[in-house]
Image (cartoon, rainbow, N blue to C red; front, top):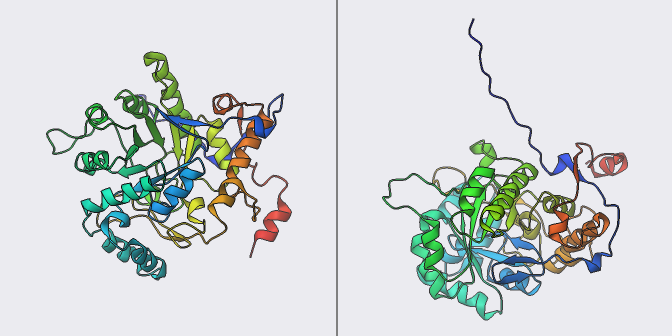
Length: 381
């Protein structure tokens, strides 16, 4: 009788399923160093704002840069399709739930105006900010020279899933080593969730990797395509690739965990899992200065007949300053993210992010509800 071989499933973990173990010593939070580096750029706040139209516009990019972080402008969104992006954003915010998906498909079918790419970059630079911009792989060759001419600082190539090897009709597809040599700025590439894909991307010479497929609050990838890996496991697998690449090359390539964050606890867990920085969408969409006017939506998938993410109402909870540094006006952990990170480093005895990578993390499915019966009952409608 033939013996059958069965595929085995590997267990993976998201933020709610793990907890951080405090250290044997503690450090004052204000004595911790949370700097994040991408080649010659150093950021005192290791937090990036997602390249999403409800999160980052010219104004938000400037404001976040002045606070030590980095906003990434989507060069394929309303900012480069329309001369009057504020009017388009307001129309999206006003649309009913029944009509918003059709409206988003229509809004993002308008052609990209190349002159607006340079104008938006120059506006960010004039504001005294570090300028990071994001494009999809399909448009990288076309837009890279324009961004270089406009003096952007950091170039992000981002799609739902990005790999170092891609099969297409093009005889010569996007080749990352050639891209890195052709533009005088760091190149960040994403998104990926596996050890092997991350390692291959790093071997192309890029400057940092974005990790995360489908975890975002407004992303529909997991529902529509069924694709993704929970963020703690994805981050750990990709940081293992980072460490292996450093052993073989001597070069350290930062990992940026992108998506799925609801509060400071999630953010701290990402750093313990091995992240060097995080990219946040929905929490920043709640800022008073956010261009989404209390709404947030995704649009990373280019297919014209599939939903481009879903619009969600996130509300407006406070200023960007409150979200990053407090004082907090809410109790759900979505404000004073930098304070939460520094405090977590302190109670774990980690002086910097690299030491935070060595902190123990345990499987703890009940950590968010353990002993919280009063909080849970009062939060119920």
